[in-house]
Length: 262
Image (cartoon, rainbow, N blue to C red; front, side):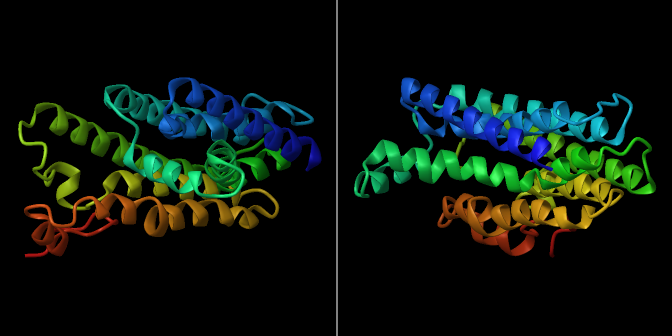
């Protein structure tokens, strides 16, 4: 356990610290958003390479490949959006204002309360990956097959919904108009649903190893964050009062894609 988990903790700490330094240089603390997936890649790769025996055709290889594919796509998507933005994301600007009034100063508070905290969350969310690497199973089980299928469904939903939203924002002239077509016709946040589905898929894979059920803390954490903390609540706070929002909210599922209400 120490051989796998401790290097993963160190990797997370070093990576978020490196991103923090780059964020200071760029004067934009929201850089952690496009770097978020790469933090988990650093954790996964550290755990993978510190196994006692590395088998390249194994369950842990499958899990790490899924993490790398998810993170690469998400980070590229968010980095492209980050580059197009002319100023720091409003959420982080608000965090900076609050940090200035806290003991220790703005930089220390942003580093500890935002970057180190996100590193900690990344470690918790990565629990299924860590436990698979600790168990180092050689032969895929039925849980591996089911988990991969669930992950693929989530990956497809997130990929399509993000692509649809990006195309809409690129082509629409009225930037205040809501996106209500495609996947967004069936869920107000299909990208978040896809994200959560992928992590539950990885957890299902972990069920095939001893004590894999313990890693349920990972998908539960990402689900809780997106449903009740920084995902849906913060996103929807920006749409209150916008034309058409109330009717869209009334007829469209918040999370799970469902047929619109009449």
